[in-house]
Length: 458
Image (cartoon, rainbow, N blue to C red; front, side, top):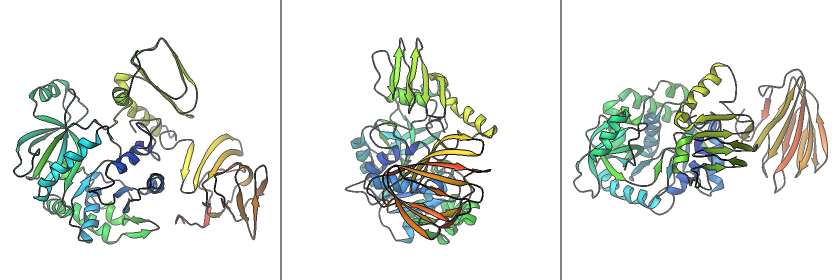
């Protein structure tokens, strides 16, 4: 949520296009696709399952498996369930663990580092990758480089893991030349990680094992058992394993890495103009210096300002000095405390069949724009408290209303009375777009009674 208002709980930063053409998740998947890499195993929250599947489909790189966490338990359990899934299939290869929300500008260097670490991982090491520091950064943990690792060129033993330091300590680390930033990327044999977790956190491993053994297939996903996973301790792979194993190794690498931890970080890594500005979207600026402005929809104009971060979506605007951009989390906390929704979701809500956006809400009515992807179908459903009017503005709709089914084309409309069974489908090859007008005493999304659903959401 450090990139709010663009990042939201239901649409976090890994699904945003912040750097190149694709999203951070798509860039990560592309980075480990091709020779030397097997299909990816994605571990994600169940609320993000359709985003993962759709974004993978867009780039033509389907994951080998998508494992759904019923609740967040940090990285150590997430890695454990993937390792157990591989071990159950007697996989012999190495397991490369990657956060899906990082930038890597020099992927060739990344691949060379993975090749260097593979020799140590094959010998039983738990390998991490240390980023060559470009300055005394206080927002990252550090790794101390130890002696050379025998039999693995370019790989070193780990002297120590260090917490995020203060400025003076960070300057000492960088000056020494033996410290690297902790990237959160790891490489090891799945069974080796399981062995270390069994030694260091046996209760965590037992809970993860039960969650995998009781997991059920749900369409193209593997859904972990909720009760078993809820019993699992929540901890990072660093705290649970890497800081305590005697077999930690590190490969130093300069790969243009950034964990995109704040808006100012994007300003740091982006291509700025002569005045030090980085703009994206519809921006008009006069006498502006060293400022980051990004707008998703409305025109943003700025006059005579410097050292600011301005980010605008259609429902929220963030204004901060660049040196306070990390503190956006306090705004998110305030929104949550006040019972607001802007930290949780955008005005455009994504669904497996497409998306909808609330255009206007008034007393007893709501207007939405709805987009249905080609071949997609909404659930058969009914509402207790609202009726709906649909007007097609592009594409073709197949409407089922009780026992009748009919087609609607552009500029045609229909009415769905309260309590009537209905569904909507796009039988065409282009997106279906329509305007929906809801009317009634209650218009919440929880007034949807699903009767049939091709996406398993009953």
